[in-house]
Amino acid sequence: MLYTLRFPALSRVWCLLGLVAFTGCYPENNKPTGPVQGLRPVYASLESVRKVEILPPQPMKTPGKIYVKDAFLFINEPDKGLHVVNNLNPEKPVKVAFIAIPGNTDMAVKGTILYANNITDLVALDISNLQQIRVTKRLENMFPYTAYPAERGVRFECADPAKGVVVRWESAELMNPKCYR
Image 1 (cartoon, helix red, strand yellow):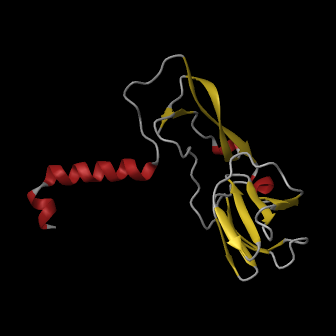
Image 2 (cartoon, rainbow, N blue to C red):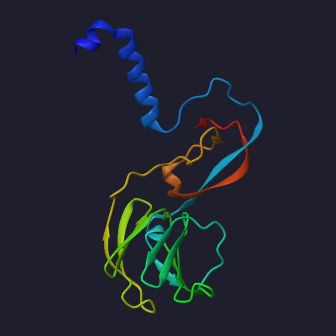
């Protein structure tokens, strides 16, 4: 309290900085007029996003985090899902499956349960039998929904909730984008 009374202008600056930090995007002084390169949201319905599928092995395009469980590797493909790899023989790893989890960025394993985020939900998958992976529980709306790209210093088309949830961002030529992060 004493800090606020002695330095009122400084406390206003901290409040403004806090507001910008928590909103995720902010107005830009030099707004573009005309076409610019930026990011466009790709939408899906919430029902389709909450569908977790076990698929045959997929090619790894942009592998992310890796979790090691016994002789298996779980390799995140950001925003798409998890590659399951049998690493019993590290010289010859064998792709086993791909767990399609839209919006997935992180995972953890405890015992035979794999926990992963699915946009805003937390899903628990039974991995005791890798031939029959299944969702055992879903906790909806556990994580905040961020309708802006992770990148900074980028112009983007503002997300429109009426079109669905944003599942990824793609590079595109945009006409006068109003959002910047």
